[in-house]
Length: 176
Image (cartoon, rainbow, N blue to C red; front, top):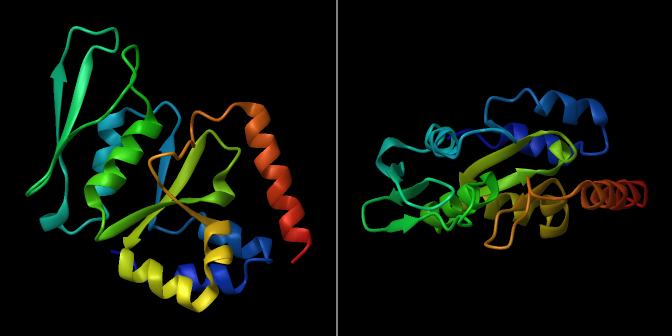
């Protein structure tokens, strides 16, 4: 797991665009391209988890238009990623991975990557996120690092939604 210092630095200097650009290079960010294979996404998040907490994935051929099911499992849990019948998608894979690692860990979307075809995520322990929230407040933390929930839409946003979110974020930034 990564240390909190780079995240703290970003939150302390969040109005400084140079700091954000520097954080884009930080090794703790998990970059996921919109064309990424869902099983690779599981592998990327596992790379940030201790071996004892990693999630196993099994790809099963099925007779549906999407062709596969992906079953995630850990010590005591098993989950088939709830894809649509006709396709797999990154959003469902990320939400399922979050469900599997909760409550010990949280995946959050680094919102500065909004608008790109490759999005950045940060996985930290729930304790680390709570420490950051206590230090910087929920609103500021979630402005930069949006929690992944069962309703999160990241890659499936249409362009109007993306531009609307970018505009809202720019307005909020100028009113700080």
